Amino acid sequence: MPINYLKEPLPRGDVLPADVTRDRVRTDYEDVFAQRAVKSDDWMPYVAPWRAVPWLEAMCGCPVRSSAGSLAAGRFVETVDGLRSIAIPGNSQWLERLREQIRELQETAPEDCWVSPTILRGPSDVLAAMRGLGDFFLDLSDDPQAVADAAARINKLHLDVLDMHFSLVREKLGGYGHIFGYWAPHVTTVIQEDAMGMSSPSCYRDLFMPYNAAIVEHLGPCVFFHLHSTGYRHYRHVLDIPRIAGLQMTVEANGPQLSDLIPVLREILERTRLILSVESHFDQLQATTRQLPAEGLYLIVSDKFVSTDGDFKNLLAANW
Image 1 (tube, helix red, strand yellow):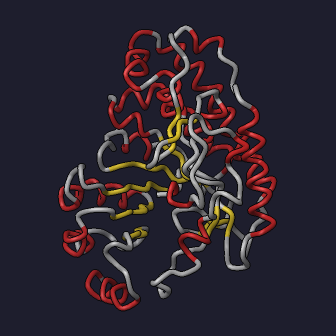
Image 2 (image 1 turned 90 degrees about the vertical axis):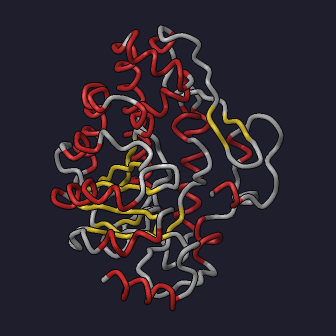
């Protein structure tokens, strides 16, 4: 979706840090909030550095490929042994461009708007980009120590980027906002390990969970974890991360139906908070919410289902 923020086409070939400018890309506020049709909900306005850029992957050295519909990180590490010698960060220009974007957004954000961290993917996702998805999964079996050592350095960079963000962004009304539209009374982010949706949950537990736990320990009790309905089997280990604020799950058309997820969603809500983003299976929402605890549940519904204030009020009446 953020690729649609472009005001003009990107240059052909690899995208460079200098190509990502305010003149070329609208902010989230300009694209999403300035002329919203639904105004009676509790969605918090935000801006974030352009989320189409794979920021951490680019900082680690991945080329940023451009196409009509998306940006993507390109593979550049040819062997698992190459992970041991690769410099992280490998491209400090992307780090500096992110710093400049955060500073610009903080200085120019509208009065009712929070400056959120951008999408920052976890070590497994970054490594899958650096090595290519197929080779990454082979690496997990062939040389898990090389994977773990590289993951530790990527996670250190992730922490440094978060510290940079919160050194530049000031709290508003005693807290911070996020791209999932919520406000938190402490610094907040949402971490993810999407590549682990295609791996054994024990692989997540043994190799990557400790790095996610380190982010929670460092930032405090307002860190969420992002999952997709197409690959969420590691969720029980995520729930075991000390002081995790909760889970966020995006319900997609090519995953289980929403009604089939009810036991999982109920289990999550019995232990923590749940941000449920309904991108598909909207017709099953009413039957689902009636079987879930209301406490701790934050529901995000795509505007393809709710396009007016009247639709929103009907949604509330039907579900609660």
